Amino acid sequence: MTSWDKYADGAASWSDDAYADAASYLAARAQLVVELGPRLEPGDLVLDLACGDGGLGAFLPEQRYRGVDASPEMVAAALARGRDVVEADLNDYEPPEPVAATTIFRAIYYARDRRALLERIAAYTEKKLVFDLNPRQYRPGDVRADLRAAGLDRLDLRPFFVPQTRAPVPGLRALERSGPVARLVLRARFTYMCSASRSSARS
Image (cartoon, rainbow, N blue to C red; front, top):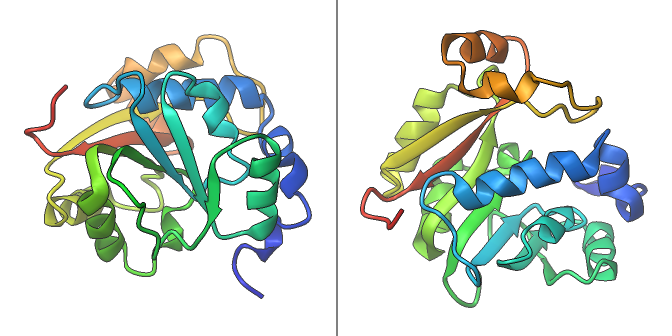
């Protein structure tokens, strides 16, 4: 059994079942994909590694979206949604053309060798890599070192306080920019959204 077989049975309704409010969660994520770090422009190509059913694509209407997932069932679900998706392991996939941005959400732990994966992504990504980071699972300093080794020397971090399995809490997102309070919240739950890019990248 592969690590993604566990997603097979629920692939057809993945986005609806994985999030308490899929629209709010994915819209907030997509906004930061566009705005965090170097800004994406209309027509930019976004490569979504471990894309699941491609739900994020609906919230990037001005960008071109391409997904990659290792689960045949997830790929089938994404194709049924009308997404441009291919079946491949994120560790091995290389797009046929450079992309403006690469995203990888809730899946960086699938990297066989994190530094090698980041180097591969940096080679085909022109503007930025956007990913989520659980600071209770991974030390941001260690990830920053791997990013620098890959040539991505600029890292923009933003706390992301949108609940995944519970309804959005009024006022919670205001704490994302609260500095010390946000860091205190991150000790218990939630994640950072991260944008890694080259310092010379156009903002």
